[in-house]
Length: 157
Image (cartoon, rainbow, N blue to C red; front, top):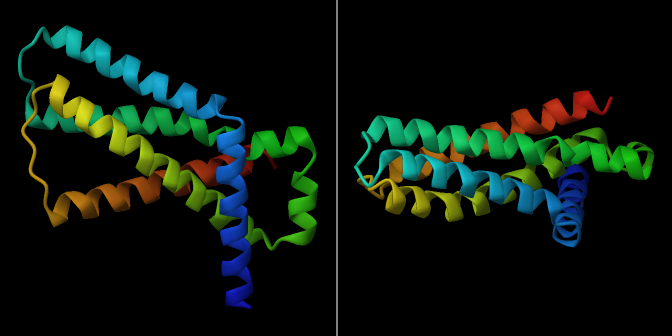
């Protein structure tokens, strides 16, 4: 049973990522939001260095709001296209939830790879690459993906 759910979740995640690539408006919106906020914050600093805690808080706020922009579309597009009923009938509910969550997590990872260097360069923030940063990023992004997916599922009924 668990292998069936895992396989179905992989298929849902794959489908979700392909749909995101085909209809990339959500990704563009998320990226433009992040880039715009980073540019505004960088300009407001006027070339000065920001405090490390402030940069970290701004980084997570940018990711949170950009993720929320993309997260609302997770189930809304399926409901509008009429394919949500298909998913309910043919795919276990856990597989749909975990598949969409995994796809959203991959999207957030890509956004982080783009946003983190920009924040570090434009805000002149110190950076230490270690295992703790990787763990915090992984767990924080996974939690964000889980929360966004659950909220999108509740919003779409």
